[in-house]
Length: 368
Image (tube, rainbow, N blue to C red; front, side, top):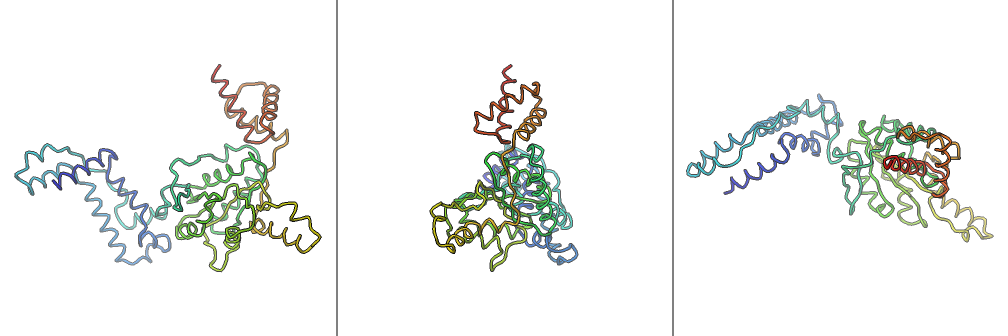
């Protein structure tokens, strides 16, 4: 009974996933082990021989398991339980799995160098749920080519990110400006551009900032590079989270992990909501202190990139680019008139408004 139960579970997995070697490959890639850690810190020759020999032995065992077939297991079961041979021959069979992509320590070393290792090898984008980092298998796939306009802003972010990936000096970035100008989309698109180079993104909401130290500790121990993405960052007042975030960006006593940068977006330049009452005072020192407190967090971002609402010409240029991309066949004069009319109904011009307008035109074309 124990054999049949275990054999049934094995068959169920193979019939669903097709291949044991795929399972072994993923577990090797996502595992945290001493060899993986050494592979990302040392050359292959510097890793002790006894560790490399153990790794090669383990891979050979996994390869042997992958080569097993249902016929082989049934034959062994018949030897162990000869009285049940008639029943055992009625069990389903399965073929051997494909060869394991890595067969020795050298090959696994190269795999870890190419793809990294550990939980963060599972995806490019991550979120936080109940304090735990969760891989997003269906994250936003937006690319920079999908975003029209704002070339200067995109170049600045790309340059900073590339310097970070190359192990050079890089700044935390604050993207601030009007709604719908593409601040969040630009951050996600930049990460997608460099995902193949090991860049990851972890998105945190305001309510999740209390998990910031824990997340930085986990990400800091990984071989990948991380953008901690703080979207729509605004504080009602200076509090413990505000102070802790300032200390981390500056480095603090414990220091900042070299593989982490913070990219934040906000509609506020100084991130802290200010009231006119705080400024309406005769105490000049108090006014200066209030203003310095409000600016103390945003000033710690080495790069501040402004995303302003486009003027009429920039807005229509974005519309033209999107119309060409989606094959909208309208006279430019009519297209611009409709786009301006749509912007009026949506409360103003923005890249988001332009994309919404184009989506409307595409849907109307489909109806025709």
